[in-house]
Image 1 (cartoon, rainbow, N blue to C red):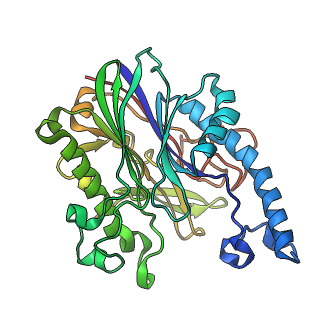
Image 2 (image 1 turned 90 degrees about the vertical axis):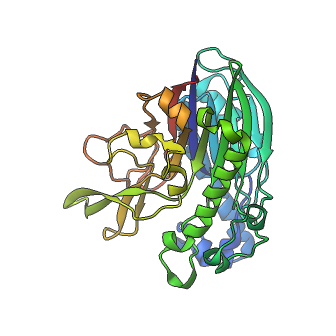
Length: 368
């Protein structure tokens, strides 16, 4: 009995316009900075027109990426609300795949911008097994003191009563063809906004490590002594990596790629003792990336931010299953290692439009 599971940071699936750029140029779209805008009203009209025009291409590409992933269950990050998800699923995704994801789940979380995690599910798997929802639980209200996770490093930026998850850990208890399966969907703290000009990743790692420990606590509490044989997956944008591929060079001079291991990662909480397996590590070391990051030619790398962590039991049951990474919606500026080049979707631009800054990850596996 197979299940095809995927995750995708769809990047700002919004129903709202952001007009904060009128007063804060750091939040203003670059194209509007080319024009003289005489009033706030004029700015808002131009911003609406710009975003509406750009969004149609973007969401067609997002839908193409999801259609290519062809998941039975798809975990999403950066979804504004249920109306946004329903409008996208009906207006774009349904037109791509022909049969929609009728089961949709989203609980409002803690993110200051209002972006949430969500889940789309078919009523049956591709192999014809019924997908049943037994229970859905949000853990957005958990605090550091609730789980005893507060420490000195967190105290630099947080209080004991602060919520652990910067968005949520959405837990779904499912039955796939009658077999139990638990799913945990997350979107961890971003690598920005560190204190005192510290490295963004290291400066925010304590928060992500606490989120990872909280997820592990939730899973272990759910299964208790049966965890060794349990079927679960932890999916989402975890905003951290255990390795990356440094990119050196330019379009003119050519590129060189150098894989490097990180000394520490928040995700070590999942991997250090075999609690779960990051299935993407089954791919070649230069072919695990889901995001291209660049701040000019001197600072470029490819890294994995998007994960499917399978329980030890599921990983053992599926030793030869390989995940796919859908990169056709990446912008043309993304640098691909040799042999990984893709046929881009129609109308993909140099930087935008694109399906997302992230790539969907999907894998088909057997439930024991």
